[in-house]
Amino acid sequence: MAYPIIHRIKSGPTTNPNIQKNWTKPIPQSTNFKKCWAILEPFMQSPTEQVFEYRRVQKERDDMMYAIKNSNADLRTETIKKGSPHTLLITKTHDTYQAQMKIWNHDGMVLERLERMKS
View 1 (cartoon, helix red, strand yellow):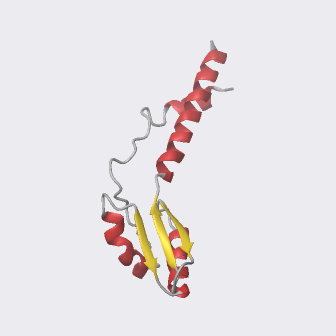
View 2: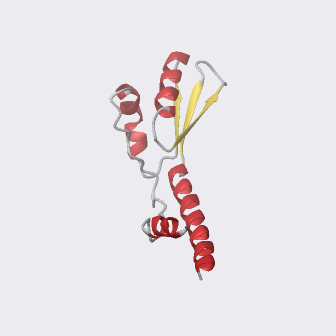
């Protein structure tokens, strides 16, 4: 009964996911929002920059937030409402790595329990 699960877990990655050594992030290959990704490209390609301040009118900030939200980019946004126009603070994250580690750790725990049950 548990054998297909054991096989699925064993056929997955055999080593734990690696965290990126720098802050370079891939640019989503979206056909939409090309203008937004062109603006973010130098930031995304920088190995050291972690935060980008995008000070624009609300419509432009909304477009940027929508582009980020509808992508798989490891970015978070926060609106800083000091000054005018407001600033969209864009921060790089390691969310993908953390999600992969969570799955990898969970699979390892499940595999260990199933192996004990099998014995």
